[in-house]
Amino acid sequence: MSDQPKKRAQNDPATDPPSEKAIQAPDITGAIDSILERLTPNGQGWQALAYANLLLTNLMTLLRPIRIKKQQPGGPRVMYAAEQLGLTRARVRLLKDSVFRGIKEIEHGERLAAAETFRTARESWRAGEQKPTPEAP
Image 1 (cartoon, helix red, strand yellow):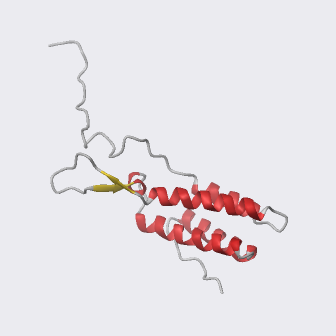
Image 2 (cartoon, rainbow, N blue to C red; image 1 turned 180 degrees about the horizontal axis):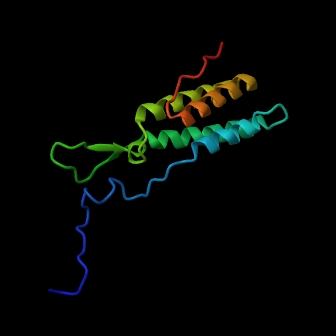
Image 3 (cartoon, one colour; image 1 turned 120 degrees about the horizontal axis):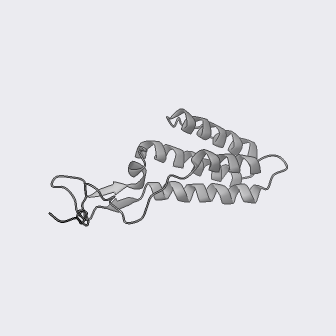
């Protein structure tokens, strides 16, 4: 027997993630808090819009399919970054819809409505289930 440690097989789907890039969970509640800080009456609306667009970009990244190069027989061909992080796609999709709605409200100058949308989204996210946010009139 040799004293060298065993090398693991390269591109082993059982031990390697489907993507070469390390996926990290974005701080979603922190991002929403940053948006809410800038939606205060004396806040910077354009900064809130920039932070909201960044959050939307991160959520879209979580919903992007990643092709699995070496799949198990009968296994899935793609995996989603959200699934790698233990999040359901439906939950991330609902949050994305809420963020999109909040962005539209900021763009239309409806800061109070946008703040309520983001508060509801944050509380729902923290609770572990994304509830639909109230619709804008």
